[in-house]
Length: 166
Image 1 (cartoon, rainbow, N blue to C red):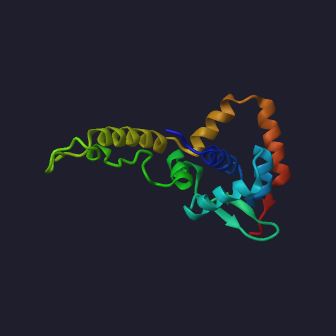
Image 2 (cartoon, helix red, strand yellow):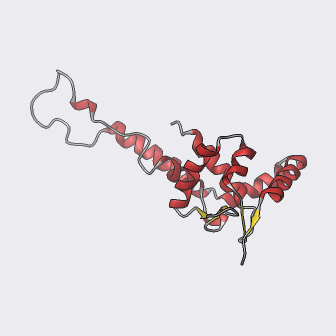
Image 3 (spheres, rainbow, N blue to C red):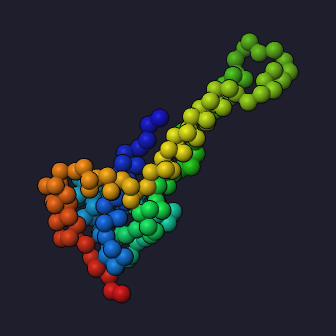
């Protein structure tokens, strides 16, 4: 299974925004710069996350993005489905019913075994992603990352956040 680059970008941005308090936002341009991606590319994914109530968007010259709910309530699966869509990665086209060697009549009374197996595997994958929250990822990152990286990230965020009036 291959996920688009937008999934990685979206997960990193959501994890970064989890460090903000409820009165702060981060502009898309600052997030794009921090992760070295184009702003237009990033905004496309941020809009999907807003539509799925993962992020909230604050408009205006002092606007930006923040989490729409607690980092404990946002799973990796939420983000993957928001960016990639809910369709299964494997979509059976029933090609077993094609070709010149099929006898007449209904010779396939059961669902395609390949489709069943692939959907079962995808369900296991989704179940695992559902267990991992942004909060848990951030806790592990803080515990294991190089302190210099943590400090530079904190500094960048502090320089780019936009406090919102309460």
